[in-house]
Image 1 (spheres, one colour):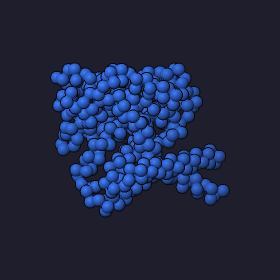
Image 2: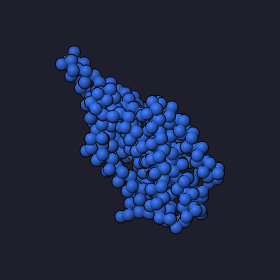
Image 3: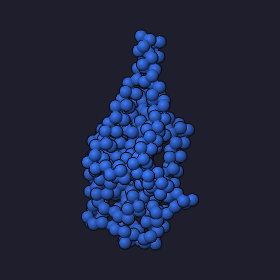
Image 4: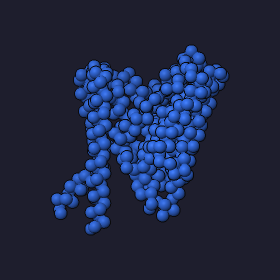
Length: 334
C-alpha cells in the first residue's frame, strides 16, 4: 500500500514540475540544433521564430480556455480566414483607414462568430465538435462569398496595414508585443478574477460547479466568445503578415493550435492548463517548424517527428492525470 502511495505521489509531482521539464527539453533541443546549425540561436533567427510563432501563441490562449471547459473549437481557422478577408477587403476599399480600425473590425467579426458558436453549445446543447465542424464550413463559405472567390493581394493593401506585422517597437516585432500583452491580460483574468476561476471549476466538475451556483452556460458562452475574438484578431495579423487574404487561409491551422496546447500540458479531459505551459508548447512547436528545415530534415520526417512528439506529450498528460486522480482518491480514503 505504501509503494502504491509513493507511485501516486511521484505521478502527482510530475504535474507540478511539468513546465520545468518541458523547458529543459526545449533547452536541450536548442543546443542540439545549434550544434548542427550555428545560425539557429542568432538574434535574427530567434526574432523570426518568435514572430512566426506569435499568431499561434495568441490562439493557444483561447483554445486553452475552450479545452479546460472540456470543449474543442475546430472553426478557428475559418474564423481567422473570414475576419482577415473582411479586414483586407475594407483596407482595399478604403486605403486611408487607420490600421487600428481594421484590427477592431476583424476582432469584432471574430467575437460575433464566437458568440454564435457559444450559443449553439451552451443554449442549444450541441456537442462542441459537431457545432464547430458545422460552423467551420459556414464561415469558410461566407469568406468565399464575401471575396467572390478572389484573393486580396499585397499590392491591393496599403503599407500602413501591412505595417501592423512588419513594424517594431524597441527592436521587438509588433506581433510579439501583441502576443505578450494578451498573455499578461489573460494571466490576470485567469488567476485573479472570479470568472477565471469559474472556468476551471466548470471544466473540473460541471455538476459541482452548477450546484455551487455557477452558470455553466454563461461560462461556455464567454469562453467561445473569447476564442472567437482572438481568432478574429489573429486573422487581421495573419493577413497583414503574409500580405494576402484568400478563402483557404489557415486551413487546418486549428490542429497546430490544439497541438501546442497539448504539448503545453493542457488536459483534453478538461479542468487543467497553465499559461506558462502553453507558452512553452507554442515555443516548442515554433522551434520544430523553424529548426527542422535548418538541419535539412526531410519534410516527410518533419511531419513524423512533430507527430511523435505530440503523441508522447499526450501519453505523458494521460499518465500525469491518472496519477493526480489516484492521489486525490488516496487523500479522500485517508
